[in-house]
Image (cartoon, rainbow over all chains, first blue to last red; front, side, top):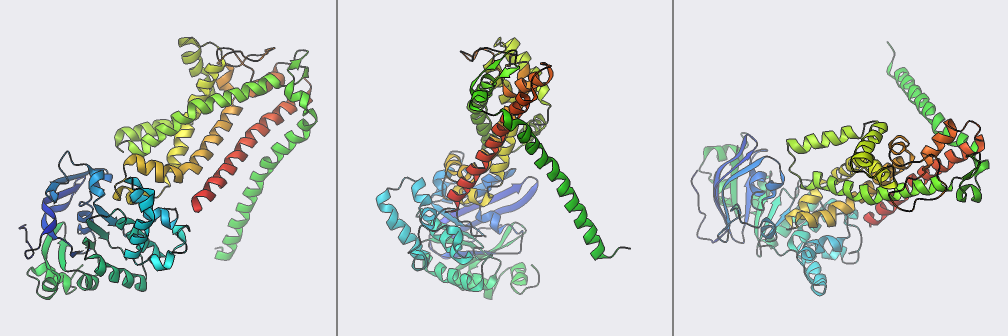
Length: 258
Length: 282
């Protein structure tokens, strides 16, 4: 697998020959890629192709699963995440994550957003500001500004997911990982989050896993296609969807399998 | 061939019958003990020692003895059990060793209590030379309830959704931060309930203390943890089997006090759980 470097943008994350095994199952087979800074990169591919697994390598969430073995390098600003002396906790402060299903804590809206900043010792005085700013960035502020003390569990699914985005943004990460953030949402909520992502791109490097190719083509600037643990093709979204260079990408995009 | 509707009726009738059958002892036992024992209850009964070779007087020393045992078990077994359960389910690598340890603990919960009594006699009373004493009883009962506390704590931690932990870790929380801010508060209701119920069990056990802590009759309360004590279940056993002329009133009164003690612990457990749940809901 050859690394394909897209254009001359700087890269926020560089992945070098990344392998991952779940026990005996070889889930990622030598992935190399540079993720461009402050762009949205979409990862597409059929279920079980390794795209979520790859996403979870960027903040080492796979560490939580028993029997996972990783080889290769993931570099953020020149630091290898998988070097033995890397502080995982420190790394995760710089990488926010939004999960498939909204998973707000059973706490108030305010406490959900303030969770990360509190962990990292932010002062009380700055807290209200960061909470407000994060909720605004996640396009949720207007809906919840009068009920910040209410339980996050009383919000609708779409609101919960935007709350989770606000919660991830509150730690002021450089990189935002989104693992099919709308898979559990209705079309209107999905649309809101899509719109929101277009704004986020100006400030964050976003890596987005999605099943939906139309969404990938709407919101992303770069797209990578995964198949059975390999990154088959990576490039600018427009080019990849209009004129894929690999036949397998072409087949998938035209719906011949997957 | 029975049709579906008839089958449904038969199944339903059968389940109703079973529920009623279960209800009979559940209601009958406390009501019967209440009816026969209520006459003995009085301030004197609770505050006086037995007199005239247990033919008269009250149950103050065994009642206090049992309360001391319970207090000791809370101090010894609760931190030990809860912390080791937290370690097993949140920190330990979930490999073969943890599985074996967990299986052993679950099996220990099923060991008859008289075996714990003999174990306590061998280890605490004889080998560690603690003698028949309050401390030997506390340690033996602690060993008895530890598997229950560990198992119920692990269960309470297991029902906390993994997605909460993931969300916390993803924001750069350490294990301890995740545990103390998310997982433990979520599991607290279940942990407290399991713990209080297991301590209720310790309060009612006879076999583990009869070799390790309890004395037949003591005129005074223990002066130190190295003194033997009287305890309610053992006292009940004595006045029911070893004192031929003990008045039934005193026997049933003692049983009623023991029952109320255990029931009140269950009640506290239920209240605490309701309270914790309300706080969590916001």
